[in-house]
Image 1 (spheres, rainbow, N blue to C red):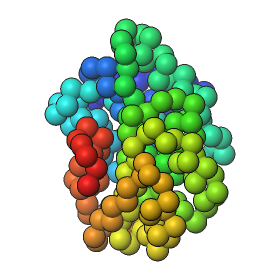
Image 2: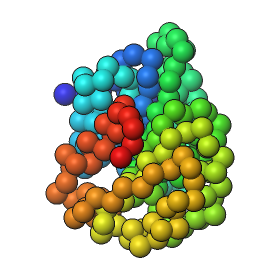
Image 3: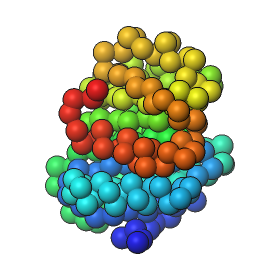
Length: 196
């Protein structure tokens, strides 16, 4: 199993699978590539395409100290233009350090829904709050492993934003070690309503 295609923009690798006008943009954790541990992002992309028919773009997240907002925005625009996507609907799946970068992108691009997994709350929390507040039209599900370092800070998010729901996953650590299938399944929430 492979991606349908790859692209490099601004020193960032992107991989994609073709589907319909619904495009899931996946921003992986800091230092991650388009495959991830146990090829979890490839399996996620194929599951979303096979189950829901949507397109998927997976964006690497190099440790280069850059925000990637411009490159990520260009990658989405290029995918839409080159594939003749009419009336695109964008969805965001962010993991760890990819969550905040995804939120920054969402302040420039309209995303219907977002699932953010183990978004760091101990670093730049003021930025995270500002981004979420600016995205009142985007439904956001913040998912935390019960053993993630940010889990104790979740009360600072809960109930503060009308568009944000929080879910805790029992037994999960920051990387969902031993729980790859559960991690991949979190992306299903992008296509299912309502958020639990």
